[in-house]
Image (cartoon, rainbow, N blue to C red; front, side, top):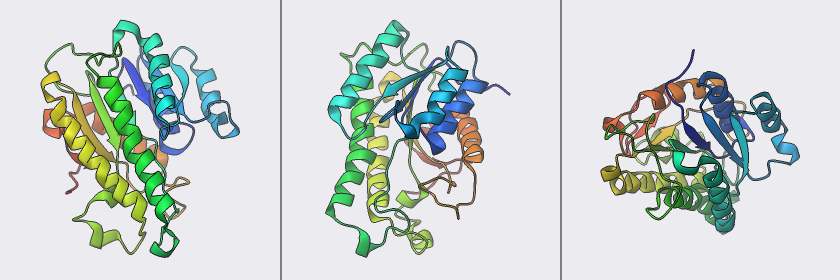
Length: 261
């Protein structure tokens, strides 16, 4: 089955887990004109072997990009590299997937320090903020495609991967399972950035929304998680493919259910 997404797609955090399977699915299911810019901290490192193998399988579709989301210079360099490839074609879809959780699950209060809080904010909030800002800058040569005024992920969109754990209203229902102070707080801040960007770029017909991928069996999610990366990615791609103006600025789960702030 092919999906309706296509054009120029950039995904961060692609060397493992959800990001890797997002790239795999997009490479396999989109049309031949689709170009996927797969970003990770060290494309040549041992942890990116699976991503390199995938790029070899789809040499015309996948371009590996070095990007450290906690480093502003790295973001700028990645931006320039992708711009050179895209040219006047414009970017259709940016998926801000890269994130960290320190300390890992359960992220107890006693194990969480100032550095964990600051690193979580820097990577999970500031990184996506800067990458989106530079991508959508009026002076940038890397402009999102604006073929029509119809808002959708097939035209021009930013999708921030968030979490159910960012919901202040839902916190009492899941806090006992994992405290994750840094991760929860940073993703709640990312939700606000998402909402702000959705208003900022409304007049440019660029869709900005946040998506919870589910509790996924990854290095971050742990072995007790309830769904696989493949199940999560399939659900998210189906959701993203059908998004429209009604989803602008919202936090949705991988099955399309609205999550309260």
